[in-house]
Image: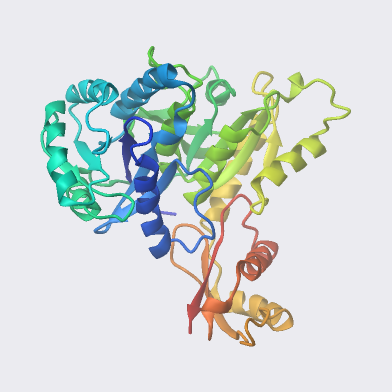
Length: 440
């Protein structure tokens, strides 16, 4: 399968608390949700989203959601996040608030940003009348040059800002390659590096080391166990002395790049810590990006009390957390003893194949139409939906269009029913499947 992987740029929104970062963020990602995504519900991880302006797509990270603690802790955390954003993002939106004017914390952030050779957009929020427009002038004192005035609550001014923002974003990196690309993701210390080392083995069967196409991330080509694939390795990335490895924001920034750059995400978790909030965030990040997913539970040998905590129960707990997308392989491994490492790779290759699977239209209709006839969509407001035809869309991952007379009356539970039937008949294990209703 010849494929092109494209990476969208990362834009980080930084600034002190309560300047309106999240409102702005929500406005940008919902604009996209409304147009592109027929996915019900906004992203589960509200600090990360995809946005699009003038045909340019970019990933947006709202650092606001990652700051916790009291005021003095705030400053340290904000500085840390700004430094991370500087390292990781392609462009930075620095938001300030016209109501409070320039604060000491704004000056701190500006000081960090003045040393940066990346595009920085100084955005003065809450400017909803002329008087406030005049007040905004004081932000010139931050030494970041021109500023943009917006009111994120009603969106005024955001168009001009976005016009300029998308001009400076790097072109999408396109990478043509016919090898599967697997990214090993998860929390720090889950065993990602050891997993990669166990795969490479001492006798490094490596054809080539391709210098990282994503900044800082090394692609390694493997040719072992009869499989050939590229591994997007974020585990071995240089540790930044300034960053505490457990910083949630850091893991998310790292995961975004790795996930976008892969076909299949191998999500690793430490069995002794469980499928916690951060692992769940990374899972939904991969799901929202329509990547194949394999979950590896590492260090199972260290779990005490396996009587009350059997593999079956542990699996059910994970499935409950990832519902309704439960058709995902969960493999219990021990990287240390190399237990089931081969199975992990075999499964990742299978998921990769599932993701690229194409179902012939005639076969699809032969199977799905009788099912729909027996279980039609429930009537809604006395309107009966008739589905006449279905086809798989020509996208790199499985998406299906069902053509009917009243697409707006088909509810999510019925779309899930169709998705489950597609999974039952065509094995899409490990892969998000999208179902769209179209007017015939």
